[in-house]
Image 1: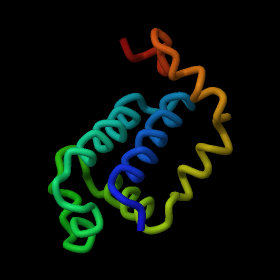
Image 2: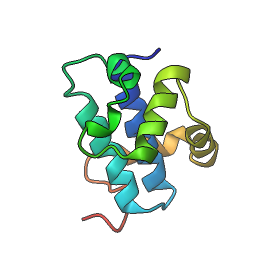
Image 3: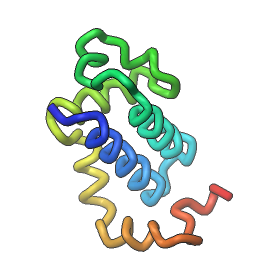
Length: 107
């Protein structure tokens, strides 16, 4: 099982790829916000998943909880793999340059 920081990094990637793809900007931000909330956990993510308490974390609803659980257990998620096929990694690198926005609807 992946640790909390690894899952948070994958969730951030999920959000970035969603934004680059032109997806719902609120959804992309929700993934990033959930990732930020994960890294503040004081209890191991594995324990929270086992107890079924993911949805008690701010910003994590049913859909994101399912994604987090799959990421933690399998190291990936089918929809993340789809996003990876649709969005080249080089585009993520370009989008990380300070001053560039990944989504024109964000200001």
